[in-house]
Image (cartoon, rainbow, N blue to C red; front, side, top):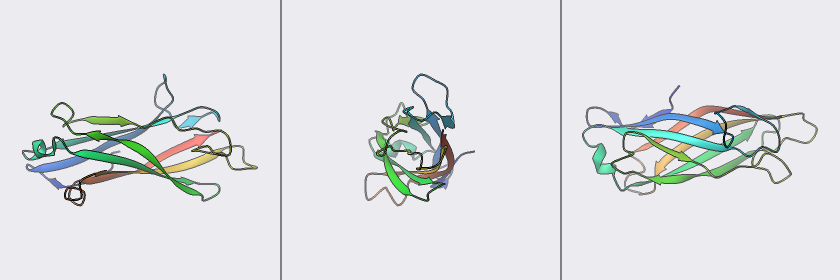
Length: 148
């Protein structure tokens, strides 16, 4: 299911928040990983409409807001950024750096006394430009990661 994005005023301009997937390097997307496995989050977005080419050259930033279901602890992970080009205008994908799942300083830690950690991830994408940010932005709520 896609996320929410604005604007959506076709045929002029539409931003799409197509997907957020969890990746174990070298494997298919997943939602359940073993503790000690590093993971990445891949965000897929796109821009449509006759005004979409005006976004070429704009930088967009990605952030992941993480809530640990067991403990209620929250954090924000930098998901990276991308520059819109003519080649990626209709489909841009950005992979985060590797996030850790083990140890006290893990990005996705299993709470003490728990056999697993379950995390809700809300992702948002917005333009780096203050002039574009309130107009072209998106979020995806529904990514769940279980670390066991």
